Length: 237
Image 1 (cartoon, one colour):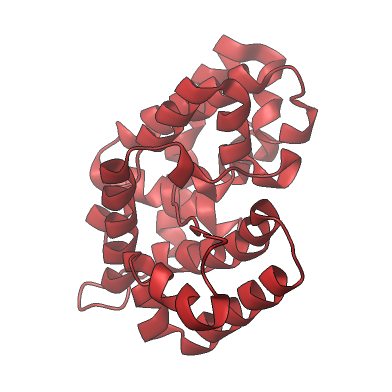
Image 2 (cartoon, rainbow, N blue to C red):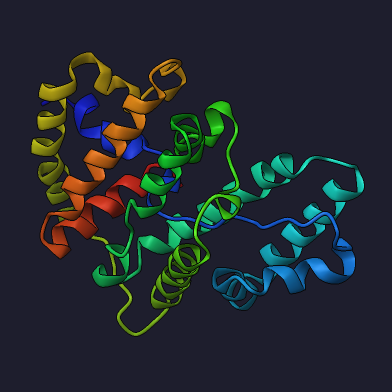
C-alpha cells in the first residue's frame, strides 16, 4: 500500500476525534460575561490554567468579533480551530486510556439531524461548521467536554506519554488493513476522506465512511488504537 493510502486516515478533520465548541449567546456582554459563560466548559478551565495567553487572546477575539457584529458561525469558525489545535497537540502526550475516549457518538447524533449537518461537523473548513450545542443532548456534550478536559490534564500528568518513531511506524502498519477494507468497500469514493471538498452530493457517504473508519480504529487493542489516533492528529497540528 503506497504512502497516499497510509495517509488517508490522518487527514480526517480532528472534530471527529475531539470536540470543543464555543457556546455563544448574543444576550451576553462579552467584556463582562463571556468568560463566565465559557467557564462552564471543563476544557476552557484547562486552557485558562495551562495556556493563559491563548485564553486571553480568544476572549479578545470573541469580544472584537461580537462588537463588529459578526454572526455566531463566524465567531465559532474563528475560535474553534485554535482550540482544536491545542487539543490535538495534547493528544500526543496523553496516556492511551485518555486518547481512546474519543467516540463517534456526537457524529451519529448530528447525522440524525441531517447528513449536511454531519458533514459540516466533520469538515467545517469545507462548508462552514455547526454549533452542536444547539443540536445535541446536554448530557452527551457534558461527557464529551469532560473527557477532553481530562485528556488535556493527563497530558501534563505523571503518566505523560512520549511518542516514539517505533510507535509511529506501528500505527502506519495497524491502519493499513483498515484502509484496505474501506477501499475494497467504497472504491474511489474513499478519496473523499482525503478530499472532502469534492464530496458535494455525497455528504451522507462521507459521514458514513468517517464513522466506519473510526469504529474500526477503536476496535483495535487500546495501545494500537491510541497510536493510530496520535498519528492521525499529528498531521493536523
